[in-house]
Amino acid sequence: QVQLVESGGGLAQAGGSLRLSCAASGSTSKIYAMGWYRQAPGKQREMVATITVGDTVDYAKSVKGRFTISRDNDKLTIYLQMNSLKPEDTAVYYCRDFCPGGECPHWGQGTQVTVSS
Image (cartoon, rainbow, N blue to C red; front, side):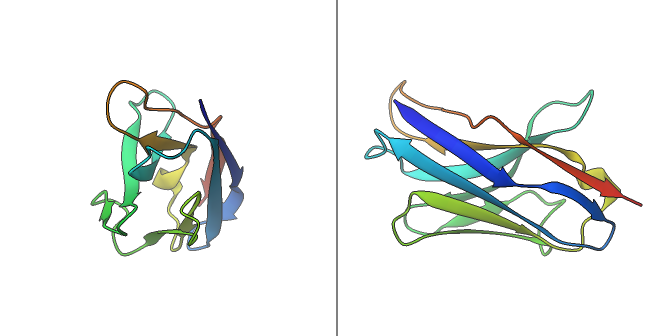
C-alpha cells in the first residue's frame, strides 16, 4: 500500500505564491509518475501537473507558466510551486500516484488552497 501525505497550502492573496509538498511512503517501487490534481466546489477534479520518474512534466493550460512541479532525487517527494496565484486557483489540491495494473491510484488527503482577490 502507498501512503501520500500532503503539506503546504493555505491562504494567499492574488498574485502571491504557495508551495505544496507530497511525500510518498510504503510500497512505492512501482510508481512511475506522480501528480497534483485539484477540485473546486461544485466542479470535477482536474489535473494540475504531473511528473514522471524520468522528469517528464505536464501541466494544465490554466497553470502553465505559473506553476512548477518538481521532485526530490529520492523520487518520493514532489512539490508544486504556485506563483501568480489567481482566485480561480482556489480548490482542494490532491496528490496522486501512477503505476501499472490496478494498484493505483492512491490519493492524499487533500490540502486547501484559497486565493483572495
